[in-house]
Amino acid sequence: MIETVLAGYEADGADLVARFETIEPAGLYAPVAAFIPSAPARMADIGAGTGRDAAWLAGLGHAVVAVEPAAALREAGRALRPDLAWVDDRLPELATLRGQAFDRVLLSGVWQHLDEEARAIAMPALAGLLASGGVLVMSLRHGPGAPSRPVWPVDVEATIALAEGAGLRLVHRVEAASVQAGNQAAGVTWTWVCLEKAPPP
Ligand SMILES: C[S@@+](CC[C@H](N)C(=O)[O-])C[C@H]1O[C@@H](n2cnc3c(N)ncnc32)[C@H](O)[C@@H]1O
Image (cartoon, rainbow, N blue to C red; front, top):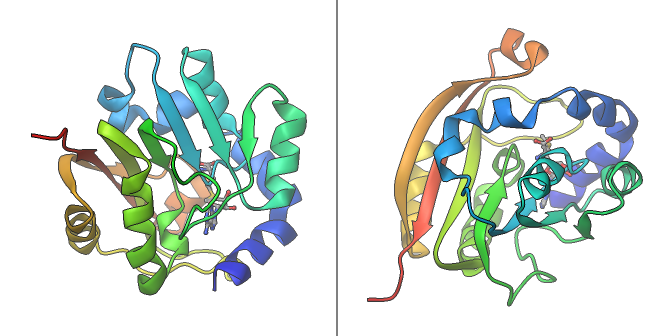
């Protein structure tokens, strides 16, 4: 199923690059602005698309890795932002990133592309990338997706329970409208959740 989703992103890449680039990162992340540190932090943006948000965060002084498995998006992003650190890796395992530690792991608009089985593998992998006291910042999509890029329904409570099972605790939850007019018209809404990895006792 991951392959089907990524094939969709490869095929639609040219259109999506233009669409992604119209989004303003500070507005997108406004619901979770309190979880973007002011001091320099280590961050991984998983499913980074064109690297729009990763570049914004790097511009704020953070050390950011842009992780994008769809070559069409990653290579377009690399052309736009050659100075970003680009990594070809994918959920659910994130095998290439394994062993690294980040203060923030960002997952914006990605979770809906994983089915239940993949989510059960992905959540511990994401938690495993967090440094002690680090925070996983995720947006959870509600509503229909494009037929070429399959989505699965997201249950917020089930997602939080999965995160708790992986050693994270909910520190912020907020509902948000879509920032894209087309998605607003299609009835898409979002829930942002911030999940913290507790420091050792
Ligand atoms: C809706 S787009 C969001 C892109 C970007 N975060 C943004 O806000 O513009 C979803 C992204 O998730 C990526 N993606 C899909 N399946 C993935 C997976 N299994 N692992 C990592 N990224 C994935 C896609 O290639 C695409 O870049």
